[in-house]
Each structure stands twice: as structure tokens, then as C-alpha cells.
Image 1 (tube, helix red, strand yellow):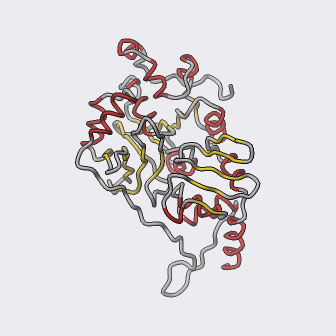
Image 2 (cartoon, one colour):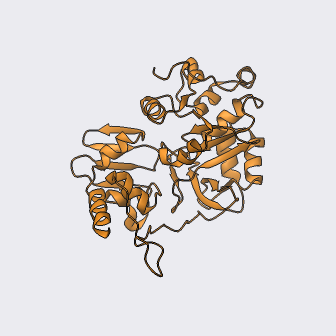
Image 3 (cartoon, one colour):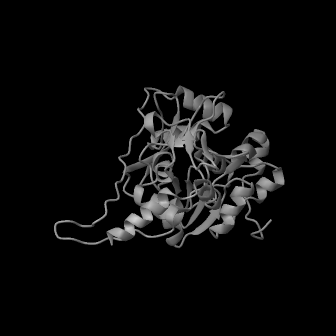
Length: 309
């Protein structure tokens, strides 16, 4: 059985990383022989050498030729899942005496950014630049779902059903340098805002789009739902929600990658209002509206009547 695992690990280490990102629905842009994977603080893959580099990473975790390290260090995916996604296989477990399994998943320890003693930059960025209501930002902070780190970034906290912190989505607040990422050790978790007793799920690429949608939507129509941000296009992060039997609505970006993600994961498209206003995402929609016109959009954005555009 260990030979099977060794074979899959080696296959994952030799996988075509650019191809992985493109077929997995990540938002990418090809620039000559470099693939830019958007939303991860400057992540690039050389399509000829298979080398990757991420400007937002620190120390020895900034790049290399091993695709597995890219998924674990930059995307925050655990080692086992990274190997399986890249190799297309399943790692094999063998129970032994005094040992639960023969293969260690080598889960990375969660390391949250250090908390600052105020939230001035986060409030200024979210409320002034992104037009999120101060009341909504304050509620998130009160619920322990949002804080400012010592670098001034907005940290959106991931919690499990028991309230335990299991990850975080990080959003830079500088207008001059864009940064998005996740805390080290974050795996397939999501930033989630629950409303009532969830029976349906709205899926977003970022926490800011999620909050924009919540602010614009008719609160009665989104009652008994959960809004989740994947911090990118990550199908594994919503797998458990989809398997729970909830109705799944896709509110990802209105672009080629978002449309592909929606269709390939059998989600109900919810982008008609974006198409009607000619915008890419729900924060762009929020920023394009005056306070008066925001009131007129107080309906849950309509789902598309057909899945292909």
C-alpha cells in the first residue's frame, strides 16, 4: 500500500501546475509563458519550467518546482488533499497495531495573523473604499468573525460548527498594493455568515463580495441561508455543504472562470443582476449604486433562467 502512496506523491510532484489551476476553475491570466493565478498575492507559474513563485509568501515558501508545496504553502491545502488533487488518485490507508493509519496527513498548524489593538484601517477600507455598511462591519467584529492584524489587513475568521477557529481569509486594505490570501494552515474551510437556520447556500469568491451581497439583498429572501466565501474558486471547500442537500447558489464573479466554476460544480447561477448592471462582482455592483438605488435592489439577486450564457 505504501508503494501506491509513493507513486501518487511522485505523480503529484511532477504534475502540470498551470494545467491544474486552469482546469480547477481558478481565475487565471496567461502572460506569454507565465500563468498568473489571481487572488493569492502575486502567484505565478512558469508554463515551460513548471516553477511557481508567490510574492506574498515569506522565506523559503515563496516558490519552487514542487506543485505540492504550492498548494500547501500558498493555498493552505493539507498535504493529503494536495497530493490527491494533483495526482487524481486516492491515498491508501493501512491500519496497524498502535497506529491508526500508515500514512500521515501532515496537517499544517494554523497560524493566525497577530491581532492589532484597533480596527481603524479595516473600517476605513471596508466602509469608505468598499462601501460596506459600518453596522455590518461592526456586527462581524462583535461576532468574532473579523479583526485587523498588525499589518492593517482585514482578517475574516473561519469557524467550524462548534465555533472553533479553523482558518482565515486575509484581505489587504492598501489602495496602492492589492493583497488577498489565507492564513497559513487554512485548508478547505470557508468564511461563513449564517442567517437563521440555513436551508440554502450562497457561494462567493471573497468575503467582500459576500458582505456586498448581504447588504444589497432582501433580508427576508435570504433568511434561513448561509453565505460562504471560498477565498477564490475552490470546489473542495463547498463539497460538504453541497453534500448536505442544501440548494447551492453560485454568486461568484461574472467572468469566464466564474461561469466555468458554476457549471462544472452543478451550482445554480445567480449572476443575472450582475449582467443587467454590466459589472463583474457584487462589490462592483454595490459601489456602482447610490444609497437610493440600493434600496431598489433589495431583492435576492435573481438566478439565471438557464445555466449557459
